[in-house]
Amino acid sequence: MREPQWFVEDEKGWKCLLCPQNCSFESNSSSLGYCRVRGLQEGRPYLPGYGECVSLVVDPIEKKPLYHFLPGSSILSTGPAGCNLSCDFCQNWSISQNSSVPTRYVSPGDLADLSMAGNSRGIAYTYTEPTIWFEYIADSAPLVRERGGAVVMVSNGEINLDPLGKLIEITDAWNVDLKSWSDDFYKRHCGGNRETVLQSIKTLAGSSCHLEITFLIIPKENDDPAEWREMAKWISGECGADTVLHISRYFPRYKLRQQPTLIETLMNAREVFSEKLSHVYIGNVSIERSDTVCPSCGALCIERSQWKVSTDGMLNGKCASCGYSLNIVHEIG
Image (cartoon, rainbow, N blue to C red; front, side, top):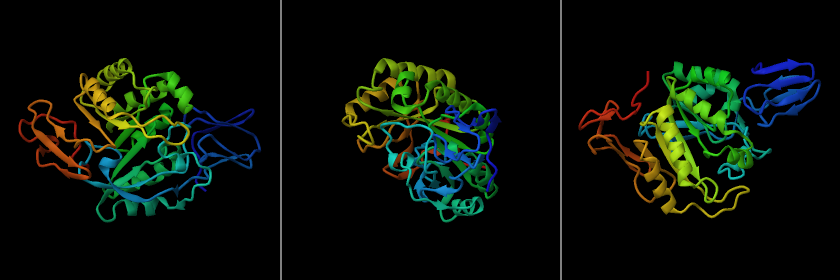
């Protein structure tokens, strides 16, 4: 069994310091942490979720969503059966919040091989919350990179800074959910805290990793344009005006039963965020194509029609017409 990391022993037992939940375990007990993939067995830290994959699917990288990282490519996607948040609106609750999810064990070496099979360009740890899989990622991600693949994380950002720094060293791109500008929202709906997420986003923005952000708009919960403006100002100031933002439409899932987000709300949000950010996309709806247009000259750089992508208007991550840098990673290695 893989030796767990980020567990420390104290006079009462053990504590996991991977994420802000800081789960505590009594000595000589056998129990799971908040995330259900880390815990204690007979008084010792163990990793029951190590390598246990809920799914193995090759997806368009735009589904992660990542629009400015290897556009038009495909990537193997997998994740653990658990999460360190308990969002009552979770769109993937059946695998993130369910204690009896069927899984398949895949060794780090086999995962690395699969990540480079066929037309896959690497691995995306996604679907639930990958950071709780720290040890498995630490063992498999370097093997993917050794084979020339990219390593992608799709995360809620609820991770302590030291382990985040270690993951940054072995990953290439992140999409982080910023669920609301309100800390109260995080407490009421997610069992988390906003400040940790903001610190994660800021740290990633200052790192070598490519960063994109996703914001799911829920009616009457995080749809205040005043909050959007504060969020846009913060992202622009701390991460850069060229930071990619994906606005997603909420649908009733799990415990929250609000009606789906109005298309008009999504369109309004894009206008508000575009006051500060150059690349704002509306995702998971088919109201229009999410093309990448040059902020400088207005040329069409990347054309997207569902999952069909044309990069004819881009050259080496820049606008082919005027040479403007689009904050696009077009190649790795």
